[in-house]
Image (cartoon, rainbow, N blue to C red):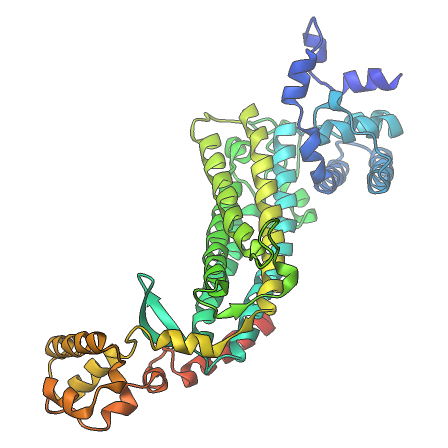
Length: 467
C-alpha cells in the first residue's frame, strides 16, 4: 500500500465522500501547523491507551509491542527533525497514526479502538498543559525570589507611598516590593488550583457517549499520571473550562506583571529617578542619542493585553457551543499556546531584570519629603494627646496649608507656629514628623516598619525555600 493510500485511509470519513476536500478547505481546517507541539502528549496518550487495550484483552500483546516499537521510532524521528508533517493529514493525531501504520501495519490501525479524536485531543491538551504548568511554577517562584532579594537590601530605604499618584505616606521600599511578592504568591496558589482540574482524564469517553469496548479508564488515567477521570462522557470531550481557567490565571498574573512594569517605567524616568536598569534590558533611540528606554518593562506591560485577549477569545469560543464536541474547539489551542509562551518568557525576563535593579535611595527620600507625607503622623500625634481624630485631621489640614504657602515641610514649621494650631503640641512632635519616625511607627502586622518588613521577608524566604 502506498503512502498516499495510507494517508487517505487515515481519514476515517473518506469512503463516505464522493469528492476530495478542496485545497482551500484543507488549509482552513488543518491544525498540524500549530498542534504538532503536542506530539509528546499524543504519543504518551496513545501508549497508555494501547497498554490498557492489551491489559483488557482488546488487542494482543504482539500488537502492543508493535505499537510501542513504532511510537519509539516516531519519537526519534520527530526529535531528529526528520518526521514529515503532512497538511493532508490535518492534525498531529492523524499524522502520527498514519506514520505508525506505515511502520507497523495493522497494529497501528488497531490503536484507535475504543477511542475518538474527540477524547484524544482533549487528553493531549490536558497532558501538554499540565507539563507547562509544572514548568511555570518554578518561574513564579523565581519572580518572587528576585523581588525578595532586592527587598532584603532595601528594608531601610524610604520610598514615597502613593494614592491617586499623589505622595501619601512614607514606606519602606522593601515593603513596596513585597506587595508584588504577595501578588505572585497568590498567582502560584491559583496555578496549583488550576492544575487540579487540568489533571483529569477524558480518555475513554470516545466521540461523546463512551464506548462498547470494556475499557479500564482508571488504568489509563493512572498510567498518564492523572488524578482521576472525567465522569461524564459528554462533558469530557467538550469541556474547555480548564483552558479558560488557565487563561484566567495567566491574565491575572500578567496584570500583576504589568503593574510592576508600569512602576519600573515610572521609577526609571527622569521625573522620578528612583532606580536604574542594566543596559541589557534597555534600548536606545534612532534619533535621540541620550535615550535609554525601558523596553522590556514596556513590552511586558503591553503583552498583558495579548494574554487578556486570549482569555476573552476562549470565553467567546465556548459561550455558544451546544454539547458536545464542535470544530470550533480547534481554536482553543493557539490562544492557549500563546498564553503559555508569553507568560513563560515574560516571567523569565522580568525576574532577571528585577534582579539587576539599581536603587537610588536619596532620590526616593527627596521625593517623599515633597508631599507632606508625615501629615497623618501629626494627626495621630494629636489623637494621642486626646484630640478626636476628625478634629485632628482638620487641625493638620490647616498646618499643611500654611506649610504649602510658606514653601516648607511640616517639620520646618517653628514650634510656636505649630502650637498656634493646637497648644498640646510639644517639641517631641519633630521626632514624629521625620520620615523615619513615620516608618518606625507603623509596626502593626503587615505594616511598613522595618521590624515588620524583616519578619515578612523571613516568612517569604522560608516559604520559597520549601516550595
